[in-house]
Image 1 (cartoon, one colour):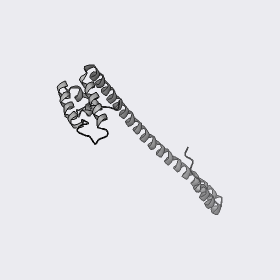
Image 2: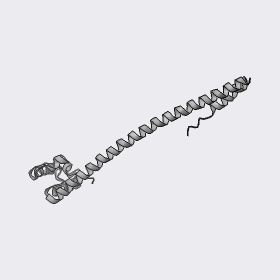
Image 3: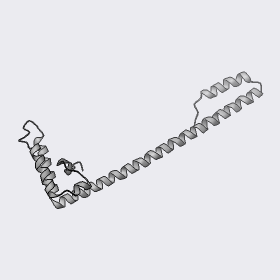
Length: 148
């Protein structure tokens, strides 16, 4: 549904639109027809198609059955949008929680790697390999930390 027949006539849509009387629809149509009539807009190449859209929207809203179907369609569409926005909010919350968990895991992995490297350095220093320990530690530090 790409067309909102109420908005084409310049009327409020949704629940407010369902409460509009036929008299108000006729009044809105007449006002818009004066504005969009092709005779009033001779230099507008879209004047005829815009007026046809206005006329078909008016016909739909004047026909009781067609209007009820259109109102029902609007309600369904609004409900779909509401549910989609709720799903999007849940999805964003889940993504944020996942990022927090990943950051915490990465911090733990870095801390574990640091402790391992300190242990290696300490053992090598105890064995009297201080110079070698520094170079080995530097090589280990330059390696990317695998956190997966």
